[in-house]
Length: 167
Image 1 (cartoon, rainbow, N blue to C red):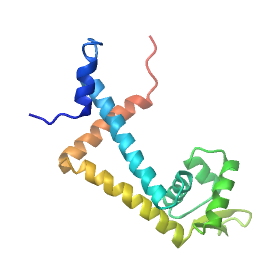
Image 2 (image 1 turned 180 degrees about the vertical axis):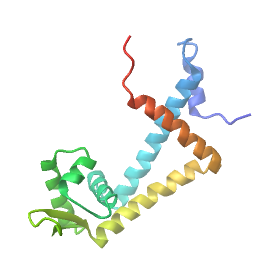
Image 3 (image 1 turned 120 degrees about the vertical axis):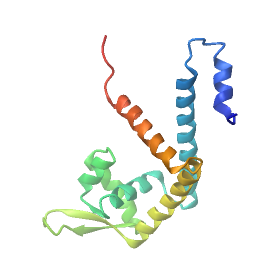
Image 4 (image 1 turned 90 degrees about the vertical axis):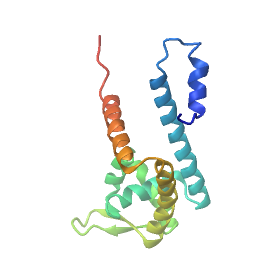
C-alpha cells in the first residue's frame, strides 16, 4: 500500500461534496501546488538567512544565466520588467558590491552589468540551499522516475501554454 499524504485526505473530504471531482486531477494539482509552496518557503528562508532580497537574487540569477555579464535591457527582458525599472535594481546591487557597471567592449555608448566575485558567491549560496532541497525531495524518486516526471510535467506545461480551444 502506498503511504497517504495530506492530499489524499483533502481529496477524500471533497469527493462526497463534489461527486464529479476527478481525484487524479485534484491530487496532481494539489500536490504540485504544495510542492511549489514548500520550495518557495525554503527559498524565502534561505534568502532571509543570507540577507538577500528576492529581487536581488532574481537579478543575480538572471545575470549568472547570461555568463555573468549582460546589458541592462537583456536583464529587464529576462526578468519581465520594463528596461527603465532595472536601473534601481542594478544600483542596489552595485551598492552591495554584487555587480559593477563596465564599459561594453563592443559599443562605447553601452554599459554592461557584470557579476562581482561577491555577487556570484551570494547567488551560489542561495542556489545551493534551494538546489539541495530540490534534490532531497526529488530523491524520493529513481533517476528514471525523475525523468518520467519531468517529461509528464513538460506535456502538462505545454498544454497550459497553449490557449484553450474556443467552442
